[in-house]
Length: 276
Image 1 (cartoon, rainbow, N blue to C red):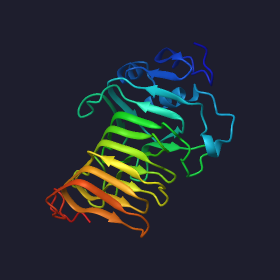
Image 2: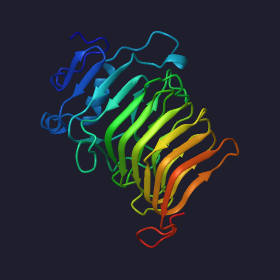
Image 3: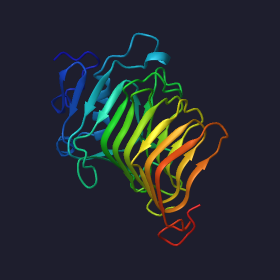
Image 4: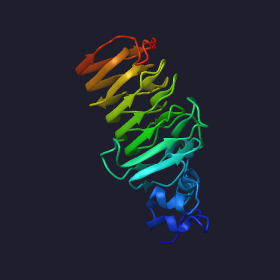
């Protein structure tokens, strides 16, 4: 298959398979390590294999539509990856706890970094227009250093089968970005590890049209959901060992819960210190 974007460096090419123009498959992380390759640089080379979109970037995204798939194992991430809109990120298995595809942050990262940060068009904050924008089947281990993942998308987009562990003090599991519209967040588990000022799901200021949380969980965390505005639905949400289940910082819109379980609103982390 001819690479429609930028061909990867010679040393990376054997580890990036492009069976057709809308798919790149990344090799097992242990093979990348054995070849002396930086995992994050290989992922960025995989992104570059897709061509840039030639239309109106702020409306239609920056890269041509495609998908990058990963194998079972731990990919080491040493700095934030700018993930272009119109590219899906798919892990190897829906079983992400201690298995499947895992991204692990380096100690050099901090709470303001996200291992993956979705970027739209010409990198404006607005990520709207990214229909069918999906991230699935990944565990993000923050390693007490970084936050988890910043994602978004318009109609028919999703964040599904994702776990975030190891958030540092002040860290965030999932940042739902401005411009998101009618997106699904399903089977996502955020574990704050009992650290103070941690947040499970944080919504930026302009999430229009709302989004739906299905079977999502936040535990050992200061704040379960921190939402600015928009009309949101939560079906089967579960909060455990938590400081505050939900905070709404704006006065526009509503959050409707259908099947909400809350266990142990103690306000204290595992260390006995206040979460909030």
